[in-house]
Image: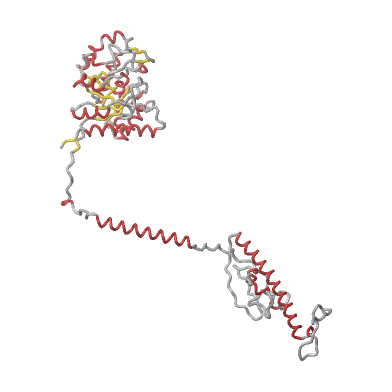
Length: 454
């Protein structure tokens, strides 16, 4: 039979053997008291856990963690004093399980301290200012990092083993020269042909720059282009440059260009006389001469006979240089007299210029064959055959520069090979120097290639 409810919401009844109602039982009252105390303590602990979690999030955002020394809980739950690396809130970071929020007869192990019930003597002291900022803890090595390190170590070990096997498979090195036997190889004979730098190759830089570069790069000598630079016109100044750089002057180019019509004098024969005198004083073996222009009529009529006469009066070779027809679009202008092809005349010595050959659009070796043993001087440069006098670095055009050098080495050429190239398009002095070094290396290589003797 269902009992009616009392005023306190409980159902009245009598306990067995007891005349008191069930709601007034001492055991019942004790259970209610314990239940109320446990619920209050659990609520306090939950709030403390939430505060600790918020503090931990702030600490992780600042990337600074502090070491926490665990303390053994005492009967009165006396909190430990915070150190320099520990904040007071770290005492409340103890996690509670779900059982702590249910009905329990006793509190959970190591509960969070309750300020309301804690004695005054055991209250937490005020936090002290840290003596120094906590150093950030080193990141822990993850499993992925450890696996990667192990794999790298394994690869290194395998490579070491393979290297050791290769080293063991090699034949032992000879430790003494008496057992060393070199394979047969042709001996490389360097011909006596001098590789010379023309001062025109550094235009518009000065003559002094040409001497400096020739000495720095290892040329055998210098050919002086007499032009508007006062140093190029002064024999004493040229001798000082030659002595200072220990660079001999092996040839003199007479001032017979359009831009040098007034250098030394306007009389073409006087120019040749002074060029011969400069060559004799400086120890040069050749004077390079261009054929006359057509408007120099009297000079042109007497040129062949006059050059041969002057060549017979000195040991200096007057080497007449091949020229080219001037072109404008599809028209050709014959600017030289008696002609730009110097092999049509009976000169004693010739200079062949490969850039002029390219501009003339004729066969190089056909001209070399016509010159024969009168070929005494070479202006080495390249050209593309575009009709312009390009004076490219050897190997950058279409002329057979390498083949000509090999031919000269095989036939015992006793003249000079002069690099007369255009470096005006060089972006910097360093690039110009590199171009001249390339030209020198090209020339020496192909002179030596054809000079191997077995």
